[in-house]
Every structure is written in C-alpha cells, then in structure tokens.
Length: 109
Image (tube, rainbow, N blue to C red; front, side, top):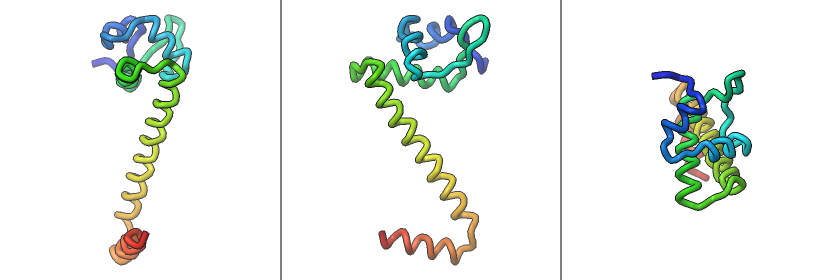
C-alpha cells in the first residue's frame, strides 16, 4: 500500500468525493496535502480526513465554513487526548507513592 496519493487516486479512493469538493476542501485548508510540480500529493491521514469531511458535509449538510469549525473542534479534541495520554504515561513512570498522591488529589476534584 502506498503512502502517497495523487488527486486522481484520492477521488478514486474516496468514492463520495468529487474533484470539485476536493479542491474546495484544500482551498478551505480543511486538508493540507503537499504541493508538488504534478499537483497535490495526499497521505493516508488525508484520505481518512477526507472521508470524515464527506461524512460531515453529507450527514450534517455543512458548508466549508461549518466544516472548518467542526474539524477544528475535532482537531482540538484529538490534541487534548494526545496530551492526556502523554500525561498518563508520565504519571505511570513516577514512583508508586507519588502516583497514589496524584490519584488522591484527582479524586478530590
């Protein structure tokens, strides 16, 4: 499986996506592919994001501005989950007494 997709590959892979929508999503900064001499080059993560954008635009009937707001919130949630996972890993690396103190403080809140 490839890690790089052309515009044509993307429109073929994401069957609900038209070339017009793809360009609108790129121009609206909803997906940020690399730009090369032959055109845009997309990654697997871009394909997944485009699938989500199609779901949101069809299911919720959102325009590019609305999609921008929703996808921004999803990105923020994803970043918060990553931060929380990093924090949990850092706590797990601490001595057990300190972990217990942290857990006790968290339960107070």
